[in-house]
Length: 75
Image 1 (cartoon, helix red, strand yellow):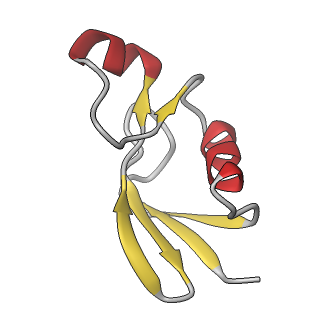
Image 2 (cartoon, one colour; image 1 turned 120 degrees about the vertical axis):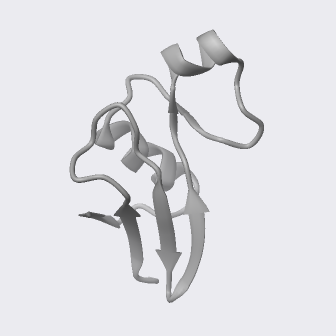
Image 3 (cartoon, helix red, strand yellow; image 1 turned 180 degrees about the vertical axis):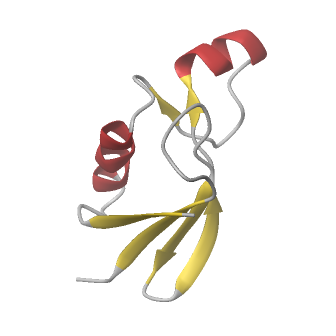
């Protein structure tokens, strides 16, 4: 199983949770939006919507993408 890390750009999970997802050393920028945010501004193309906007929902999203054991690291 690959090592999967989500490095959050903020100190805690709150209104924003942009970061980068690293899978076995390969990194990609990753952003999440809340349901309320995209309802106000329109859903951005290719950005996952979390409802509710929590780390647990992000974990479920990553599991659905094939990464069930993501380690979250905060700034």
